[in-house]
Length: 236
Image (cartoon, rainbow, N blue to C red; front, side):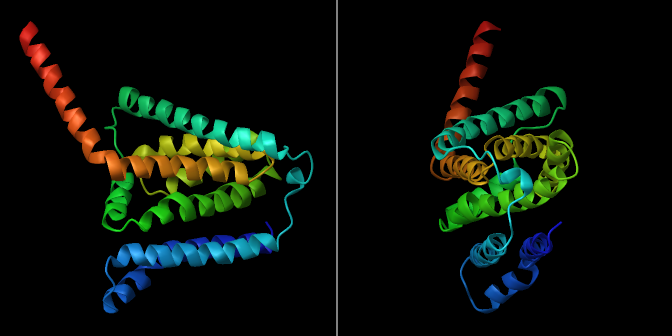
């Protein structure tokens, strides 16, 4: 693994751990929404450092030739959004129907609550986060594994790490499946920007729907449940 890749991993890990110092610091300074504000500062700072390190690092050998033309790459960015959603839906069905796991992500809900309290947090979940994750998990981790192993071993291992880092093991399959899709897009197009666009778009849609339409969706679900109960009681 290139030296700059190790620097990228260390930067990413330090960013994840920085809250132990940064959040109390924000509290001490009297900043409103200290978790949100430190997330913005730490994610943006890490992104700037990592982009600088990436610029100084040569592309992996498999990325240096046969890169997909821009017009087709744009198309695959759009296709990638649907592939990621399809993977998420398939994983959700397996979790609920076969594994008996209740739907809904505590991690996503927590992020949505932060975004409702301070809309600037949407930039973290929808832009900074996905870009950082694609650089770390696809370019650095998957790319390094792909130099030694075939696609499937590299994709499986990097996606497993990608799922585990979200600290929501009950929904590991969901994150894992999306990791596979993003790894496929990276190799298919040989352009990191493609899984980045797909990931950013997917996160943005999910967050915006939950932030601005979440209450309406919950109300519709309650009305549907009441209707089902009424119909069930009628036929009984």
